Image: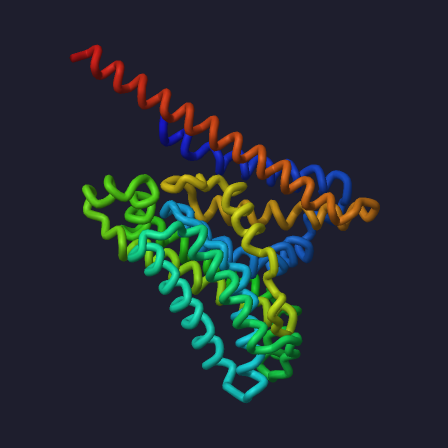
Length: 325
């Protein structure tokens, strides 16, 4: 019973995504064409990468408000380093490593000083965004041969940004099946119980924030590939979209329940909505926010209902056990 309840949000997300795609394809014949589907993945790659890291943090019972600012910082640092002549492969390794360190620092502050993740990562948001503007007030265009080759490859085959996103989803989904993934859910369910189960709470919390910083920084690098530029304003407000994708994907904000694949579906759903509105041609882009807001409210209410159903199921099992004794 509990397993079915835990899967319900993801199934609901998949059902809504399928219904949205079906409705759009009926109204617009070319909606489900290969180019549209490819662009759907590629256009939402840096949002998806940020949402993957956010999922791990939320599963552990935390929140990371800095992911959007880290995307912007990573993009402008990438562009600046390339402008200074640093080889692209070295930049592609260095920038995600910086994001990893930034996230680990936030996780350490949350754990060591027992501070609310909301406040720590809000400070991280201001810090990362401020540092991005220190690097450059203006957007920096990227004129690098490797970027030109990547752009050509994307046009001929599949967007490199989309491939990176899909690879990250696969890696994170595998990580969920490991002992680390079990520890993350245990910590999200309750630190005291997690310690009794043998989970290393401090190490796990620092690790999820480090991975969130890594994935956000990787999203910033992908954003430079997508736009051929880097800027301090890139990723503004992205943290809210990432959290929305996580919740719509079925991850409980209270922690302990959810999947990366659910978040992947949530990202696709957030991408389908503006794409369908664009195909419509007569609707304002603000309808995207209206629809997303309605979906977010619906999924929050669904989570509340599932939590109540889970508690009632647990209570009935305990009552049955007490009766048998």
